[in-house]
Length: 232
Length: 218
Image 1: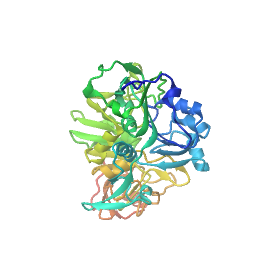
Image 2: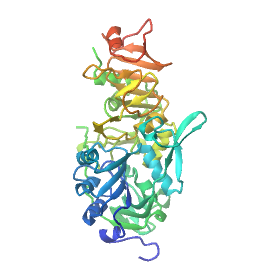
Image 3: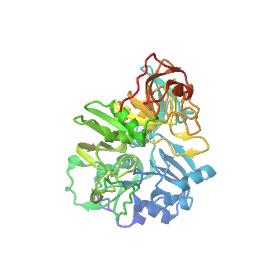
Image 4: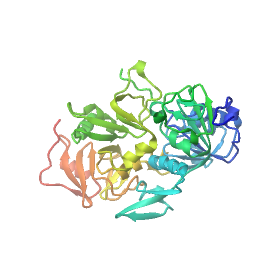
């Protein structure tokens, strides 16, 4: 690599340095906008005892769900895991720890983590099991919870297009958690559908500026659809 | 007769106003989109990052990158916007969404709602529901009045882990429209042909029945 060129050409290089016990933040919502090849590479690497921060945990056999098959995940931080039978089984067995986190709080935890904000107050979760053990404080007569930021050893992100400098744009609702995840990794790896020339992306339309991105790799994607609903 | 799912959606749709930004939860709330009155502009917010959700796509327009919060493939209407999850929840938590409609397992007379967890049974997670109920002023809960076993879902105190505390003021069940005021459910309307006695029998929490309780008309 030279200068701002972030491109790597193998998935091995893309995840170089990933070790057992690390925390990985993953973008995606359901199966939409997930870094499916980076997840597959984690499976190939057989890295264990991972903490995965992601809104969902894929489905059985695809997305983050495949990391459960060989018990690579010791803890998930997610808002919704209802699409995954293996997840529920490992959780009920005590093989997997889960920190169920409200979706907006999860997004904000990543955003805060990437922005150097160690914690923030939110009304979300007050009076619920989410509030257990957390500090609360009243502002203007309303009670708020103190939620701590999240950072990861790695962030794995799915973009649409990127240039060599790591400027990224996302496609449609495949954006979701990806921009926040990208800011919150010590090493942020973005896999994209298309690499474009530096200067080709309109600077004002870039979703993730290259400063957050350490590695860029071009992949091919299955883009599996969870619920295909049509007007017919 | 208890309301059908479509009738529940029709009743909720009567609460819409021109120019509203609305978040519809999964299930009956989603059906409300089918009954937006002609000539009224309503923009649907989907918490995965879409403001201006449209209909399901035609088969040839299905796009894996274009989904709603229920992970269904959708389209976007002209004038829509797409953004990150943090932006989406800034809208929700910042109180910018005019109306939120969502389902629940239980609500109680203090405006508490339980909708996400049955201990030792169902572990799915709260998704965006805790953010939605904490962030919105105007929330309608839609649910059946009682379980299949006949257990009331309108309680003095929720028995399940809460989704939000003191945040619910309006409830539409298959039997009635109720509002929560001063520690009680106030019966505002009843489903066509449903007696006040039946509603009383199926409401465990404190219920106030005004002198006149109109029947809904469809």
